[in-house]
Image 1 (cartoon, rainbow, N blue to C red):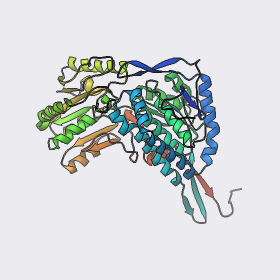
Image 2 (cartoon, rainbow, N blue to C red):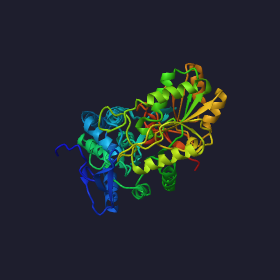
Image 3 (cartoon, rainbow, N blue to C red):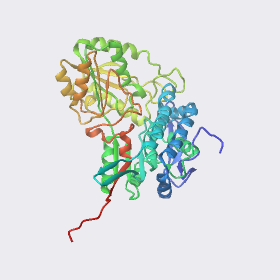
Image 4 (cartoon, rainbow, N blue to C red):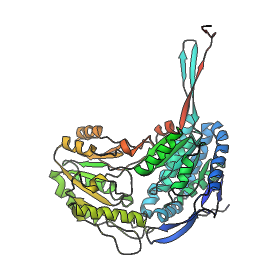
Amino acid sequence: MPYDPQPQASHFVNGAYVEDTAGTPFDVIYPATDEVIATLHEATSAIIEQAISSAKAAQKAWGAMSGTERGRILRRAADIIRERNHDLSVLETKDTGKPYSETFYVDATSGADALEYFGGLAGSLTGEHIQLGDDWVYTRREPLGLCVGIGAWNYPTQIACWKGAPALACGNAMVFKPSETTPLSALKVAEILHEAGLPAGLYNVIQGAGTVGAALVSDARVDKVSLTGSVPTGRKVYAAAAADIKHVTMELGGKSPLIIFDDADLENAVGGAILANFYSSGQVCSNGTRVFVQKGIKEAFLKRLAERLETAVIGDPLDEATNFGPMVSRRQMEIVQGYIAKGQEEGARLVTGGERLDGDGFYLQPTVFADVSDDMTIAREEIFGPVMAVLDFETEEEVVARANETEFGLSAGVFTRDLSRGHRVIGQMEAGSCFINSYNDAPVEAPFGGSKLSGVGRENSKAAIEHYSQLKSVYVRMGNVEAPF
Protein backbone atom coordinates (compact mmCIF):
# COMPACT_ATOMS: atom_id res chain seq x y z
CA MET A 1 0.00 0.00 0.00
CA PRO A 2 1.54 3.39 -0.97
CA TYR A 3 2.15 5.78 1.91
CA ASP A 4 -0.64 8.33 2.42
CA PRO A 5 -0.28 11.02 5.13
CA GLN A 6 -4.07 11.01 5.66
CA PRO A 7 -6.17 8.23 7.22
CA GLN A 8 -8.08 6.33 4.54
CA ALA A 9 -11.31 5.45 6.38
CA SER A 10 -13.13 5.97 9.67
CA HIS A 11 -11.87 2.82 11.42
CA PHE A 12 -8.78 0.61 11.47
CA VAL A 13 -9.78 -2.96 12.35
CA ASN A 14 -8.03 -6.31 11.96
CA GLY A 15 -5.05 -4.79 10.18
CA ALA A 16 -6.89 -2.68 7.62
CA TYR A 17 -8.93 0.48 7.16
CA VAL A 18 -12.67 -0.24 7.15
CA GLU A 19 -15.75 1.87 6.56
CA ASP A 20 -19.40 1.37 7.40
CA THR A 21 -21.47 4.27 6.08
CA ALA A 22 -24.46 3.03 8.08
CA GLY A 23 -22.80 4.68 11.08
CA THR A 24 -23.85 8.21 11.97
CA PRO A 25 -21.63 10.70 10.10
CA PHE A 26 -19.77 13.40 12.00
CA ASP A 27 -17.49 16.20 10.81
CA VAL A 28 -13.92 16.91 11.84
CA ILE A 29 -13.42 20.67 12.16
CA TYR A 30 -10.10 22.50 11.76
CA PRO A 31 -10.15 24.83 14.79
CA ALA A 32 -8.11 27.55 13.08
CA THR A 33 -10.66 28.16 10.33
CA ASP A 34 -13.90 26.41 11.40
CA GLU A 35 -13.70 24.39 8.17
CA VAL A 36 -14.66 20.73 7.76
CA ILE A 37 -11.51 18.73 6.95
CA ALA A 38 -13.01 15.22 7.11
CA THR A 39 -16.29 13.41 7.62
CA LEU A 40 -16.19 10.12 9.50
CA HIS A 41 -18.81 7.57 10.53
CA GLU A 42 -19.47 6.32 14.05
CA ALA A 43 -18.81 2.64 14.63
CA THR A 44 -21.88 0.52 14.07
CA SER A 45 -22.57 -2.56 16.16
CA ALA A 46 -21.01 -4.58 13.31
CA ILE A 47 -17.78 -2.55 13.47
CA ILE A 48 -17.66 -2.83 17.27
CA GLU A 49 -18.13 -6.60 17.04
CA GLN A 50 -15.43 -6.89 14.39
CA ALA A 51 -13.02 -4.87 16.52
CA ILE A 52 -13.59 -6.92 19.67
CA SER A 53 -13.70 -10.35 18.05
CA SER A 54 -10.57 -9.77 15.93
CA ALA A 55 -8.71 -8.46 18.98
CA LYS A 56 -9.70 -11.48 21.08
CA ALA A 57 -8.68 -13.84 18.28
CA ALA A 58 -5.25 -12.24 17.84
CA GLN A 59 -4.34 -11.81 21.49
CA LYS A 60 -3.53 -15.40 22.48
CA ALA A 61 -0.73 -15.85 19.95
CA TRP A 62 0.62 -12.37 20.69
CA GLY A 63 0.66 -13.07 24.43
CA ALA A 64 2.53 -16.32 23.80
CA MET A 65 5.36 -14.56 21.94
CA SER A 66 8.49 -13.60 23.82
CA GLY A 67 8.61 -10.07 25.14
CA THR A 68 11.70 -9.43 23.05
CA GLU A 69 9.80 -10.28 19.87
CA ARG A 70 6.93 -8.00 20.85
CA GLY A 71 9.32 -5.22 21.77
CA ARG A 72 11.08 -5.36 18.42
CA ILE A 73 7.81 -4.48 16.65
CA LEU A 74 7.06 -1.60 19.01
CA ARG A 75 10.53 -0.15 18.56
CA ARG A 76 10.19 -0.42 14.77
CA ALA A 77 6.90 1.51 14.99
CA ALA A 78 8.67 4.20 17.04
CA ASP A 79 11.27 4.59 14.27
CA ILE A 80 8.56 4.96 11.61
CA ILE A 81 6.75 7.60 13.67
CA ARG A 82 9.95 9.61 14.01
CA GLU A 83 10.62 9.33 10.26
CA ARG A 84 7.13 10.68 9.54
CA ASN A 85 7.04 13.24 12.33
CA HIS A 86 6.37 16.15 9.95
CA ASP A 87 3.28 14.61 8.35
CA LEU A 88 1.97 13.32 11.68
CA SER A 89 2.51 16.74 13.27
CA VAL A 90 0.60 18.48 10.47
CA LEU A 91 -2.25 16.00 10.93
CA GLU A 92 -2.20 16.58 14.70
CA THR A 93 -2.32 20.34 14.17
CA LYS A 94 -5.30 20.04 11.83
CA ASP A 95 -7.00 17.64 14.25
CA THR A 96 -6.48 19.75 17.40
CA GLY A 97 -5.53 23.28 16.30
CA LYS A 98 -2.33 23.12 18.35
CA PRO A 99 0.56 24.98 16.68
CA TYR A 100 2.93 22.99 14.51
CA SER A 101 5.76 24.52 16.56
CA GLU A 102 4.33 22.49 19.44
CA THR A 103 3.11 19.28 17.78
CA PHE A 104 6.42 18.78 15.93
CA TYR A 105 8.29 18.52 19.24
CA VAL A 106 5.74 17.05 21.65
CA ASP A 107 2.99 14.90 20.18
CA ALA A 108 4.10 12.18 17.75
CA THR A 109 7.58 12.21 19.29
CA SER A 110 6.08 11.55 22.73
CA GLY A 111 4.14 8.64 21.24
CA ALA A 112 7.34 7.29 19.71
CA ASP A 113 9.08 7.61 23.08
CA ALA A 114 6.38 5.45 24.68
CA LEU A 115 6.64 2.76 21.98
CA GLU A 116 10.42 2.75 22.25
CA TYR A 117 10.43 2.66 26.07
CA PHE A 118 7.89 -0.13 26.47
CA GLY A 119 9.36 -1.95 23.49
CA GLY A 120 12.68 -1.98 25.32
CA LEU A 121 11.02 -3.05 28.56
CA ALA A 122 9.00 -5.90 27.05
CA GLY A 123 11.79 -8.48 27.17
CA SER A 124 12.42 -7.82 30.87
CA LEU A 125 8.90 -8.68 32.06
CA THR A 126 9.75 -11.75 34.08
CA GLY A 127 8.48 -13.38 37.24
CA GLU A 128 10.44 -14.48 40.30
CA HIS A 129 11.48 -17.66 42.09
CA ILE A 130 10.70 -17.98 45.82
CA GLN A 131 12.44 -20.84 47.65
CA LEU A 132 10.46 -22.39 50.55
CA GLY A 133 12.71 -25.09 51.95
CA ASP A 134 12.57 -27.94 49.44
CA ASP A 135 9.39 -26.53 47.90
CA TRP A 136 9.26 -23.40 45.82
CA VAL A 137 6.96 -20.88 44.19
CA TYR A 138 7.43 -19.18 40.87
CA THR A 139 5.46 -16.29 39.46
CA ARG A 140 4.52 -15.52 35.89
CA ARG A 141 3.60 -12.07 34.57
CA GLU A 142 0.73 -12.63 32.18
CA PRO A 143 -1.38 -10.38 29.92
CA LEU A 144 -4.83 -9.25 31.03
CA GLY A 145 -6.28 -10.04 27.60
CA LEU A 146 -8.31 -7.39 25.78
CA CYS A 147 -7.84 -3.76 26.83
CA VAL A 148 -10.05 -0.86 25.82
CA GLY A 149 -8.49 2.60 25.59
CA ILE A 150 -10.66 5.73 25.52
CA GLY A 151 -8.83 8.90 24.59
CA ALA A 152 -9.26 12.62 25.27
CA TRP A 153 -9.21 15.24 22.53
CA ASN A 154 -6.17 17.23 23.62
CA TYR A 155 -3.32 14.77 22.93
CA PRO A 156 -4.74 12.20 20.49
CA THR A 157 -1.45 10.72 19.20
CA GLN A 158 0.26 10.69 22.57
CA ILE A 159 -2.67 9.11 24.41
CA ALA A 160 -3.08 6.44 21.72
CA CYS A 161 0.54 5.43 22.32
CA TRP A 162 0.62 5.94 26.10
CA LYS A 163 -2.17 3.35 26.36
CA GLY A 164 -1.24 1.13 23.45
CA ALA A 165 2.49 0.73 24.12
CA PRO A 166 2.33 -0.83 27.62
CA ALA A 167 -0.74 -2.86 26.68
CA LEU A 168 0.98 -4.40 23.67
CA ALA A 169 4.33 -4.82 25.47
CA CYS A 170 2.58 -6.94 28.10
CA GLY A 171 0.96 -9.16 25.46
CA ASN A 172 -2.54 -7.67 25.35
CA ALA A 173 -4.71 -6.59 22.45
CA MET A 174 -6.28 -3.12 22.44
CA VAL A 175 -9.37 -1.50 20.99
CA PHE A 176 -8.87 2.25 21.11
CA LYS A 177 -11.62 4.84 20.79
CA PRO A 178 -10.31 8.37 20.28
CA SER A 179 -12.38 11.43 21.05
CA GLU A 180 -14.87 12.23 18.31
CA THR A 181 -13.48 15.79 18.38
CA THR A 182 -9.96 14.70 17.34
CA PRO A 183 -10.35 11.27 15.69
CA LEU A 184 -7.72 11.26 12.94
CA SER A 185 -4.29 10.78 14.53
CA ALA A 186 -4.99 7.47 16.30
CA LEU A 187 -5.79 5.89 12.92
CA LYS A 188 -2.24 6.65 11.76
CA VAL A 189 -0.83 5.12 14.96
CA ALA A 190 -2.72 1.89 14.22
CA GLU A 191 -1.59 1.92 10.59
CA ILE A 192 2.06 2.41 11.57
CA LEU A 193 1.96 -0.32 14.25
CA HIS A 194 0.74 -2.85 11.72
CA GLU A 195 3.20 -1.63 9.11
CA ALA A 196 5.91 -2.29 11.70
CA GLY A 197 4.79 -5.93 11.92
CA LEU A 198 2.06 -5.99 14.55
CA PRO A 199 -0.26 -8.91 13.73
CA ALA A 200 -3.71 -7.93 12.50
CA GLY A 201 -6.35 -7.31 15.14
CA LEU A 202 -4.06 -6.39 18.02
CA TYR A 203 -4.56 -2.61 17.84
CA ASN A 204 -7.93 -1.59 16.49
CA VAL A 205 -9.22 2.00 16.33
CA ILE A 206 -12.94 2.69 16.08
CA GLN A 207 -14.77 6.01 16.13
CA GLY A 208 -17.74 7.38 17.98
CA ALA A 209 -19.10 9.27 20.95
CA GLY A 210 -20.11 8.01 24.38
CA THR A 211 -22.45 5.29 23.14
CA VAL A 212 -19.58 3.55 21.33
CA GLY A 213 -17.39 3.86 24.41
CA ALA A 214 -20.17 2.46 26.58
CA ALA A 215 -20.58 -0.54 24.25
CA LEU A 216 -16.87 -1.30 24.55
CA VAL A 217 -16.68 -0.84 28.32
CA SER A 218 -19.72 -3.02 29.01
CA ASP A 219 -18.68 -5.91 26.76
CA ALA A 220 -17.95 -9.01 28.84
CA ARG A 221 -14.97 -9.92 26.65
CA VAL A 222 -13.09 -6.78 27.70
CA ASP A 223 -10.63 -7.26 30.58
CA LYS A 224 -9.31 -3.74 31.15
CA VAL A 225 -10.45 -0.16 30.55
CA SER A 226 -8.13 2.84 30.44
CA LEU A 227 -9.72 6.28 30.15
CA THR A 228 -8.27 9.75 29.76
CA GLY A 229 -11.04 12.30 30.17
CA SER A 230 -13.16 14.38 32.50
CA VAL A 231 -14.29 13.44 35.99
CA PRO A 232 -18.00 13.10 34.98
CA THR A 233 -17.03 10.73 32.16
CA GLY A 234 -14.68 8.90 34.51
CA ARG A 235 -17.45 8.26 37.02
CA LYS A 236 -19.63 6.65 34.35
CA VAL A 237 -16.85 4.55 32.84
CA TYR A 238 -15.50 3.46 36.23
CA ALA A 239 -18.97 2.38 37.38
CA ALA A 240 -19.63 0.45 34.17
CA ALA A 241 -16.26 -1.32 34.36
CA ALA A 242 -16.77 -2.13 38.05
CA ALA A 243 -19.99 -3.97 37.24
CA ASP A 244 -17.87 -6.72 35.66
CA ILE A 245 -14.83 -6.27 37.98
CA LYS A 246 -12.64 -5.12 35.08
CA HIS A 247 -9.18 -3.68 35.60
CA VAL A 248 -9.31 0.13 35.35
CA THR A 249 -6.97 3.07 34.88
CA MET A 250 -8.49 6.55 35.13
CA GLU A 251 -6.53 9.66 34.13
CA LEU A 252 -8.95 12.50 34.79
CA GLY A 253 -8.96 16.26 35.32
CA GLY A 254 -7.35 18.64 37.75
CA LYS A 255 -7.31 22.10 39.28
CA SER A 256 -3.68 21.96 40.21
CA PRO A 257 -1.76 24.45 42.37
CA LEU A 258 1.45 26.16 41.27
CA ILE A 259 3.10 27.81 44.29
CA ILE A 260 5.59 30.62 43.73
CA PHE A 261 7.54 31.79 46.77
CA ASP A 262 9.03 35.26 46.79
CA ASP A 263 12.57 33.89 46.71
CA ALA A 264 11.89 32.18 43.36
CA ASP A 265 13.80 33.12 40.22
CA LEU A 266 11.23 35.49 38.67
CA GLU A 267 11.93 34.66 35.05
CA ASN A 268 11.77 30.91 35.66
CA ALA A 269 8.60 31.26 37.73
CA VAL A 270 6.89 33.26 34.99
CA GLY A 271 8.03 30.73 32.40
CA GLY A 272 6.71 27.88 34.52
CA ALA A 273 3.37 29.64 34.95
CA ILE A 274 3.13 30.15 31.17
CA LEU A 275 3.82 26.45 30.55
CA ALA A 276 1.32 25.56 33.28
CA ASN A 277 -1.50 27.66 31.80
CA PHE A 278 -1.05 28.55 28.13
CA TYR A 279 0.72 25.62 26.44
CA SER A 280 -1.78 23.95 24.09
CA SER A 281 -3.97 27.01 24.73
CA GLY A 282 -4.45 25.78 28.27
CA GLN A 283 -5.99 22.45 27.23
CA VAL A 284 -3.85 20.20 29.45
CA CYS A 285 -5.26 18.16 32.34
CA SER A 286 -2.24 18.65 34.60
CA ASN A 287 -2.13 22.43 34.22
CA GLY A 288 -1.30 24.51 37.29
CA THR A 289 -4.22 26.87 36.92
CA ARG A 290 -4.29 28.07 40.54
CA VAL A 291 -1.10 30.13 40.71
CA PHE A 292 -0.38 31.04 44.33
CA VAL A 293 2.09 33.93 44.41
CA GLN A 294 3.63 35.11 47.68
CA LYS A 295 2.76 38.76 48.28
CA GLY A 296 6.34 40.02 48.16
CA ILE A 297 6.74 39.08 44.51
CA LYS A 298 3.13 39.40 43.31
CA GLU A 299 3.23 42.73 41.43
CA ALA A 300 6.61 41.98 39.86
CA PHE A 301 5.29 38.57 38.78
CA LEU A 302 2.14 40.03 37.21
CA LYS A 303 4.09 42.79 35.42
CA ARG A 304 6.62 40.36 33.91
CA LEU A 305 3.91 37.84 33.04
CA ALA A 306 1.93 40.49 31.12
CA GLU A 307 5.08 41.56 29.28
CA ARG A 308 5.89 38.03 28.17
CA LEU A 309 2.31 37.27 27.12
CA GLU A 310 2.52 40.28 24.81
CA THR A 311 5.17 38.38 22.83
CA ALA A 312 2.92 35.36 22.17
CA VAL A 313 2.59 34.77 18.42
CA ILE A 314 -1.07 34.01 17.77
CA GLY A 315 -2.06 32.98 14.26
CA ASP A 316 -2.04 30.19 11.68
CA PRO A 317 -1.09 27.01 13.59
CA LEU A 318 0.70 25.63 10.53
CA ASP A 319 3.02 28.66 10.46
CA GLU A 320 6.14 27.61 12.37
CA ALA A 321 6.37 31.09 13.96
CA THR A 322 2.98 30.65 15.69
CA ASN A 323 3.23 29.50 19.31
CA PHE A 324 -0.35 30.00 20.52
CA GLY A 325 -3.27 28.46 18.68
CA PRO A 326 -7.06 28.21 18.87
CA MET A 327 -9.27 26.23 21.20
CA VAL A 328 -10.09 22.73 19.96
CA SER A 329 -13.76 23.48 19.16
CA ARG A 330 -16.42 26.16 19.21
CA ARG A 331 -18.07 24.43 22.18
CA GLN A 332 -14.87 24.44 24.23
CA MET A 333 -14.26 28.09 23.35
CA GLU A 334 -17.76 29.01 24.53
CA ILE A 335 -17.28 27.08 27.79
CA VAL A 336 -14.09 29.04 28.49
CA GLN A 337 -15.77 32.34 27.56
CA GLY A 338 -18.39 31.52 30.19
CA TYR A 339 -15.69 31.08 32.83
CA ILE A 340 -14.04 34.38 31.86
CA ALA A 341 -17.39 36.14 32.29
CA LYS A 342 -17.87 34.38 35.64
CA GLY A 343 -14.46 35.53 36.84
CA GLN A 344 -15.35 39.14 36.08
CA GLU A 345 -18.79 38.82 37.67
CA GLU A 346 -17.32 37.41 40.89
CA GLY A 347 -14.86 40.28 41.26
CA ALA A 348 -11.51 38.95 40.04
CA ARG A 349 -9.24 41.57 38.48
CA LEU A 350 -8.67 41.00 34.76
CA VAL A 351 -4.96 41.68 34.21
CA THR A 352 -4.77 40.83 30.53
CA GLY A 353 -6.73 39.08 27.78
CA GLY A 354 -10.30 37.92 28.14
CA GLU A 355 -11.45 38.43 24.55
CA ARG A 356 -12.10 36.30 21.51
CA LEU A 357 -9.93 37.23 18.55
CA ASP A 358 -11.48 38.30 15.26
CA GLY A 359 -11.83 35.70 12.50
CA ASP A 360 -13.37 32.30 11.88
CA GLY A 361 -11.19 30.22 14.20
CA PHE A 362 -11.76 29.47 17.89
CA TYR A 363 -9.11 31.84 19.25
CA LEU A 364 -9.14 33.29 22.76
CA GLN A 365 -6.52 35.65 24.17
CA PRO A 366 -4.26 34.34 26.93
CA THR A 367 -6.15 35.52 30.01
CA VAL A 368 -4.90 36.31 33.52
CA PHE A 369 -7.02 37.10 36.58
CA ALA A 370 -5.47 38.45 39.77
CA ASP A 371 -6.92 39.00 43.25
CA VAL A 372 -8.68 35.65 42.94
CA SER A 373 -10.09 34.12 46.13
CA ASP A 374 -10.35 30.41 46.88
CA ASP A 375 -14.14 30.35 46.64
CA MET A 376 -14.42 31.87 43.16
CA THR A 377 -15.65 29.59 40.38
CA ILE A 378 -12.48 30.11 38.34
CA ALA A 379 -10.47 28.85 41.34
CA ARG A 380 -12.67 25.79 41.95
CA GLU A 381 -13.63 24.33 38.56
CA GLU A 382 -11.46 23.00 35.75
CA ILE A 383 -11.67 25.47 32.86
CA PHE A 384 -9.48 23.70 30.28
CA GLY A 385 -8.56 26.85 28.44
CA PRO A 386 -6.05 29.74 28.51
CA VAL A 387 -7.19 31.24 31.83
CA MET A 388 -4.80 31.73 34.76
CA ALA A 389 -6.06 32.51 38.26
CA VAL A 390 -3.47 34.26 40.47
CA LEU A 391 -4.04 34.03 44.22
CA ASP A 392 -2.06 35.81 46.97
CA PHE A 393 -0.55 34.08 50.01
CA GLU A 394 1.67 35.03 52.93
CA THR A 395 2.99 31.88 54.68
CA GLU A 396 4.06 28.39 53.71
CA GLU A 397 1.64 26.76 56.14
CA GLU A 398 -1.25 28.79 54.73
CA VAL A 399 -0.52 28.01 51.08
CA VAL A 400 -0.11 24.27 51.67
CA ALA A 401 -3.55 24.08 53.27
CA ARG A 402 -5.20 26.17 50.56
CA ALA A 403 -3.45 24.32 47.72
CA ASN A 404 -4.80 21.00 48.99
CA GLU A 405 -8.34 22.33 49.47
CA THR A 406 -9.64 20.80 46.23
CA GLU A 407 -11.39 17.62 45.16
CA PHE A 408 -8.71 17.10 42.50
CA GLY A 409 -5.18 15.80 42.95
CA LEU A 410 -3.43 15.45 39.61
CA SER A 411 -0.44 17.80 39.77
CA ALA A 412 1.31 20.45 41.85
CA GLY A 413 4.36 22.63 41.44
CA VAL A 414 6.56 24.88 43.52
CA PHE A 415 9.12 27.53 42.57
CA THR A 416 11.68 28.48 45.22
CA ARG A 417 15.44 28.79 45.61
CA ASP A 418 15.16 27.02 48.99
CA LEU A 419 15.50 23.34 48.06
CA SER A 420 14.54 22.17 51.54
CA ARG A 421 11.31 24.12 51.29
CA GLY A 422 10.71 22.86 47.75
CA HIS A 423 10.88 19.22 48.83
CA ARG A 424 9.00 19.91 52.06
CA VAL A 425 6.08 21.59 50.28
CA ILE A 426 5.87 19.03 47.47
CA GLY A 427 5.92 16.30 50.11
CA GLN A 428 2.70 17.73 51.53
CA MET A 429 0.89 18.15 48.21
CA GLU A 430 -2.03 15.76 47.69
CA ALA A 431 -1.20 15.15 44.03
CA GLY A 432 0.37 12.45 41.91
CA SER A 433 2.56 14.27 39.36
CA CYS A 434 4.59 17.10 40.87
CA PHE A 435 7.31 19.56 39.91
CA ILE A 436 10.00 21.63 41.64
CA ASN A 437 11.21 24.69 39.68
CA SER A 438 9.54 23.29 36.57
CA TYR A 439 6.08 22.43 35.30
CA ASN A 440 4.32 19.96 32.97
CA ASP A 441 7.30 17.76 32.15
CA ALA A 442 6.00 14.28 31.27
CA PRO A 443 8.85 11.94 30.26
CA VAL A 444 7.76 8.37 29.58
CA GLU A 445 10.24 7.16 32.20
CA ALA A 446 8.23 8.82 35.01
CA PRO A 447 4.85 7.65 36.34
CA PHE A 448 1.95 9.94 35.46
CA GLY A 449 -1.40 10.03 37.24
CA GLY A 450 -3.37 11.57 40.06
CA SER A 451 -5.05 11.11 43.41
CA LYS A 452 -8.51 11.98 44.74
CA LEU A 453 -10.93 12.71 41.87
CA SER A 454 -8.07 13.05 39.41
CA GLY A 455 -7.89 9.33 38.88
CA VAL A 456 -6.60 5.91 39.77
CA GLY A 457 -3.61 4.02 38.47
CA ARG A 458 -0.53 5.29 36.64
CA GLU A 459 0.51 5.68 33.05
CA ASN A 460 4.08 5.51 31.74
CA SER A 461 7.19 4.14 33.46
CA LYS A 462 7.52 0.64 34.91
CA ALA A 463 4.46 1.41 37.03
CA ALA A 464 2.24 1.04 33.93
CA ILE A 465 3.27 -2.61 33.61
CA GLU A 466 1.36 -3.35 36.82
CA HIS A 467 -1.80 -1.97 35.21
CA TYR A 468 -1.56 -4.00 31.99
CA SER A 469 -0.52 -7.39 33.37
CA GLN A 470 -1.28 -9.74 36.24
CA LEU A 471 0.80 -12.11 38.34
CA LYS A 472 0.21 -15.84 38.52
CA SER A 473 1.75 -17.70 41.46
CA VAL A 474 2.63 -21.39 41.07
CA TYR A 475 3.43 -23.45 44.20
CA VAL A 476 5.63 -26.48 43.46
CA ARG A 477 5.75 -29.23 46.12
CA MET A 478 8.82 -31.42 45.82
CA GLY A 479 7.80 -34.07 48.36
CA ASN A 480 4.71 -36.02 49.34
CA VAL A 481 1.37 -34.35 50.08
CA GLU A 482 0.16 -34.71 53.66
CA ALA A 483 -3.62 -34.72 54.05
CA PRO A 484 -5.73 -35.13 57.22
CA PHE A 485 -7.62 -38.13 55.85
